[in-house]
Image (cartoon, rainbow, N blue to C red):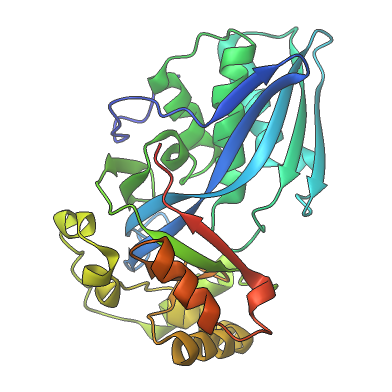
Length: 305
């Protein structure tokens, strides 16, 4: 299947991988929404999005091994990734096999889960993209970049994002991807053990009934140091998420006072982030974070692929 014609990417961007006698290891990076504008729901029920999104150096890891008995088996370690039948990684393998006409092949998929589900970081979608590209190589499936992008779009609106480069502008339902240049920022990622169900967050957003859409930042601005543009960032789902989960708002406000930096919500939450120009600024921010919140923190940086 060819890609949706709205998918824009000059080349397939392959995740970090290493092959060995025990299989093919693939990294599946998290993403953060730098700026997220949301429009009112369309006739099909989906909200149009306009977001600058960046992949970061916080990963799930997958080990892929081919099988000759046609079975696809998923093992998950670390954080819970849900029943294998519903997991995007398993579905990606099934979809690729069907598209390539490889009825007899199978795979063992070991998923080391570090990206918390439901945190607004796209971990499940990234896992699916890693399986598509990894098994395409392992099975010699021969799917083109366009065909893989089409399969990714079938799996979910934001899966194609993880086939693109380090940073992108994502519009439509999330399926229209254009590369952008972003300053090589560092960040403190805060991962509260809180659930922000995406559907509920959008219902909170719809209830606010904002009539005037905001204007997206000029993409050229993002190539400048983070300190030039982080005060301008907007996430239309941040306030709805914090209304829905008051504990998230409490952590957000505590961080803002302690660090004197803007605190941003990624996606529909519950992950928070402090964007920094460089590693030194990131270390300074970490030093100011209250001790009770520090165990929730992860330092990362912009992925360079």
